[in-house]
Each structure stands twice: as C-alpha cells, then as structure tokens.
Length: 86
Image 1 (cartoon, rainbow, N blue to C red):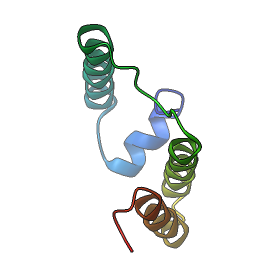
Image 2: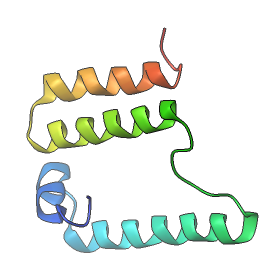
Image 3: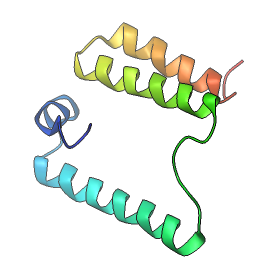
C-alpha cells in the first residue's frame, strides 16, 4: 500500500519520495533477510494478528485522508489488540 500511495505518503509525512523509497527498500530487505536467515515467516498467523493488520491499515488510510481523530481511534484499537493498552 505504501508504494502505491507514495505521493500521498510523502505529502502527509513531509518526506521526499527518494527517502521513502530508500526506507521501504531497506525495510523490505530486512524482512527478507529475517525470513531467509532465521527461517521465520513474517506476517499474520492468527485471527488476532489479522485483526491487528486490518486495524493498522485503517489507521494508515485515515492518516492519509487527514482524518486525524479517526486515525487516533484506530491507533488506540491496534494497541489494545496487541495488549499494549488496557
């Protein structure tokens, strides 16, 4: 989703497209390295993980749409699903 919406991401975050591209490439390389070298499959493996992924996607969309109140609520929900908040 980040790559597909790079213009909106860079506008909202005040980050250059080059910086965003570099950061995403490094992040993906790290993920690939973890999976290859540690034999760990990254990504959701349970319904709770899938729910967290969906909520964080909703957060990101709301953030890009500048719906800050809605984004804040999704961020809190995501933290609750991970038991980071009561």
